[in-house]
Amino acid sequence: MVVLAILAAVIVFSVGNVFSTTKERAYETVRDQIQVAVTAYATNSSHRGEYPCNISAATFSNLNCSTCYIVDMSMLIVPGEGMLRNIPDGCIDRGTLDNCTGDAAGCKADYHYIWGVDENGTVYSFCDNASTSSAKCTSNNSGYQDVWP
Image (cartoon, rainbow, N blue to C red; front, side, top):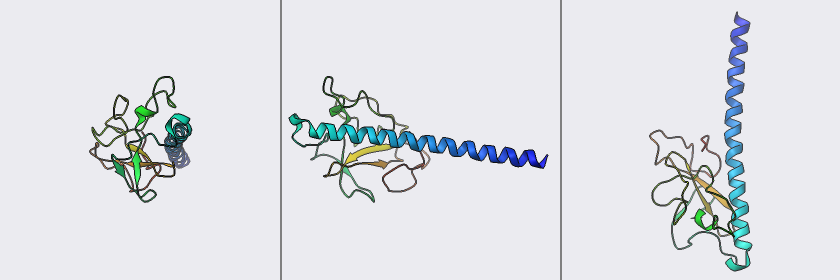
């Protein structure tokens, strides 16, 4: 009986790690999709090296990016020239200072990430707890913060 209890504990622990790893991989996939879209947008001749954000508008900072300009996802999903088909999972809806400005819809209040780009075109995220009752984000750091989406 003790052997079964130990075996059950090992299985529960292993399954928990699989779900955590799956969430982290989902985060990384979305981050990579946004990075490719931002790079494609900036290298398009009609955008002349500009990034899909309003440089004069909102920014965020974290330990990895001192000034990250918030990516305007509506600029990446424009029909015919869009780099993304829809708003990626994870984009938080805060009402203001989020990725769903303009005509973009798809951010959700129970999501956690705001995506930004620095002056070199590198995509970063900011994990935000503002819309949740429990603090899920673990630090003021870019990257996966033990919560998805």
